[in-house]
Length: 252
Image (cartoon, rainbow, N blue to C red; front, side, top):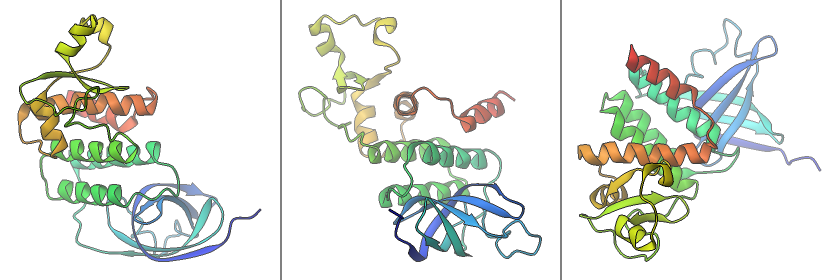
C-alpha cells in the first residue's frame, strides 16, 4: 500500500547532511521540529544559478516546505530564518559531531521537539563562542534522555533513594547509579577489569547533571566519561567520524 502523500509547509528545520543525487540535485537530510529527521530531494540544487545553493547550509535555521509520501520527499521551498553566525574552527567540528549523533541515533520521521530545541540552543551557543564542552554535554544528555535513558541521575538505580552528594557511584547501564558501598556489600569485584568502562562518579556530579549544571570542573570531566560510555553503548561500539577529526585536531 502506497504511503499517503502529504504537503508540509513552514516547518522549522536544520540541514544535517547533503550528498549529490543524479546530475544536478541533492539529497538533503534535515531535522525538523515536528517531523524529526526527514530525507528530501532538492531538485536542481546543484545548478549554478539555483536559489537553493546558498540556502541549504548546515547550522543555519530554515523554514522548509516539502511534499510526497515515500521515504524521500521532495523539497518545495527553503528559506533562511537568519540570525545565526556561521560556525568556524572547533565550533564547526563540534557542530558536525551533533549532526552525526542525530543521523546515527535517531530514526527517520520520529518527532523529537525537545531534542530539536536542545539542538537549536547548542548550535546558537556554539555560534556565540561559548565554551564547547558544556554545550556538548547538555546536548548529549538531552539526546540520551530522548532515546530512553530517563534512568534517574538523581536517584540510586536499585533503591530509588536520592543520590547522596558526598557518595561515590558507578553508573551501570542495566541499573543506573549504584553506590560503591552497595556493590561491596554484594561482594562485587571493584577492579577496573571487572567493572569494564563504568566511570567513578561523585554524587554531586550526578546531581549537577540532573540539574543541567556543568559549571564544576569535576562535573564536566566525569560527565564526559559517563556520557561517552552511554553513547558508545547506544552506537554499538561503532566509531564516530567527527570524534576522530576532533581528536586529530587536538593532537595538532
